[in-house]
Amino acid sequence: MTIVETSLVGTDLGLTGLSGVPGADGPQKVKDFTSDQEVRWCPGCGDYVILATMRGFLAELGLRRENLMFVSGIGCSSRFPYYLDAYGIHSIHGRAPAIATGLAVTRPDLSVWVVTGDGDALSIGGNHLIHALRRNVNMTILLFNNRIYGLTKGQYSPTSEQGKVTKSTPMGSVDHPFNTLSVALGAEATFAARALDSDRAGLTEVLRAAAEHRGISFVEILQDCPIFNDGSFDALRRDNAESHLIRLQHGHPIRFGAEREFAVVRSGFGLEVVLADTVDEAEIIVHDAYADDPEYAFALSRLSAQDLSHVPIGIFRSVTRPTYDDGVRTQLATARDRKPVGSNTLQELLTGKETWTVG
Image 1 (cartoon, rainbow, N blue to C red):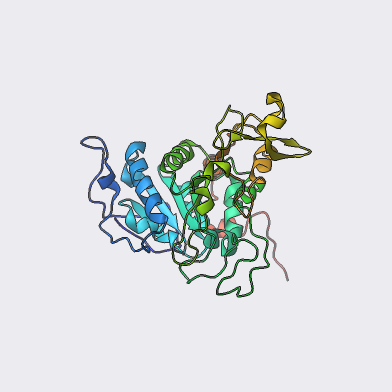
Image 2: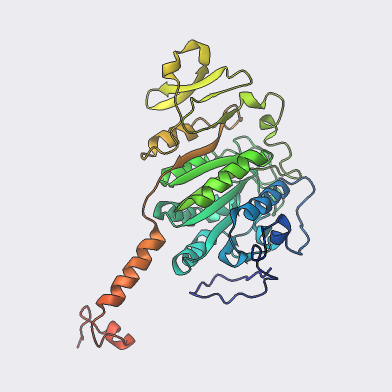
């Protein structure tokens, strides 16, 4: 695998070093996407499961390695490109979506993926994240959320719950955390989903749908940091986890619980969780992932609670809209076709119709 550490993007990165093309002589396998780099995450980190799931998923996806590009920022999650035998850029803090946008625009032959964390994406990178989402750039953003800064040794992050005691908040955080899906849907992401690291089947399903989506795909993956935030998502893994996890399936009534005893219904302008036997079946919301208006999906995201009492997972929204990169390429092609004779020099562009001489 070749890792290029840079923030400059051109039309041809000139990357070399792949050891071969999987799929050329038969089906792709997990080992085809496994690099020779030692994986340096802490024992028990949820990133291991995500990596293993991704390797297996890529083998099924059928993309050739030279058409894959993984861009990361800074953080534990951002070591991800080193561990895949595909092209990758380990970039700078918070700027991965901006760099990936350049790649998506200039290299339509690439499947572009961003790997980031809750601190990298939602703190220093918040501005880049929301604009990539609203522009509907054709790429997939994987946000690993462990609700802590892991690489820098345990400070609270933009998703840490209120009252969280950390090295930087010894008396407990007073910040109200971001609801990541609400942020993505507020920016009108055309594809937004959430998965749990330990749920490999659910994670694979979400990743496959994200990869197939044309436009921006935003996937939040809840994962454990065993060193600085151990057990943060234990409520979603215990025997009674089904009482907390709201599994979204398009076209199905939203009911959950071990006995499907809970349901989601409308409440004013939003949604709420009730006991299913206290309402008529017709009142229970039937999940529509393809609803064009983001209000419904946003209301679903607001069911998420800091204490994890309710956590919707699955695909919240998947709609079609023109992409930013297609639009830019169309404009460039149009500009080339319309370019008047004699306007090929830089000087002519600098002293065109919108300039004048003073004095």
